[in-house]
Amino acid sequence: MNKRVIFQDWGLVDYQEAWDRQEALFAQTVELKTKNRTLEQVEQTPNYLIFVEHPHVYTLGKSGKVENLLLDEQGLKIHESSYYKINRGGDITYHGPGQLVGYPILDLDNFFTDIHQYLRTLEEAVILTLSNYKIQAGRYPGYTGVWLEPDTFRARKICAMGVRCSRWVTMHGFALNVNTSLDHFNHIVPCGIGDKAVTSMQKELGQRLDMEEVKQVMLGHLATLFGMQLEG
Image 1 (cartoon, one colour):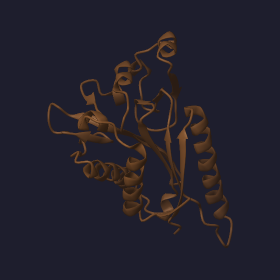
Image 2 (cartoon, helix red, strand yellow):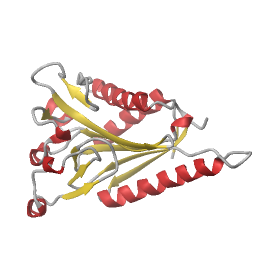
Image 3 (tube, helix red, strand yellow):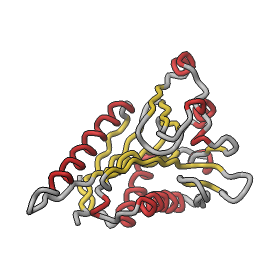
């Protein structure tokens, strides 16, 4: 098994460009896995972990409902936002500056072939990262992602998740609200859940966070939980 993971920080990148770049890495990995089935000596599949921020954009997953986007084309223009229907699981979410988006493109044959465990491990990395900042977070039964006070009427989501997996190769991932402007969530029914709020680390702590520091904390927890050997 190859636990080496190439880490790349793409900075602020347009959603379509990042999606295209993800798809290229994903397709190359799937193609190699398919090719390996015919070879006597197989070639190790690569793993990638991408961190990125996006300009204002709304994305709708395969199981989502378009009516959960509350803006028409004119409204999207007014709010300088884009909209894409994409090939991950989940419903609608928002990405924007100040949000840490993670795209693990992993061959789970190198780690563990269990998509439920994969999602729970991503959630655990976020929960541990938040704990470093004295924010107590957990899971909301029946939903993916990370929540604050999930068992109360004050339940609020701080990290959304939606993934795609084919031949045990993953793409898409998680979106943690660090310094995110939460006003943009008013234009959707976040993740299709109409009666729950959305929050950010900045809102919970009452101050802006150092994004580079948050990235390093998150990177450390992901590496530990998955047993990654980070490169790049």
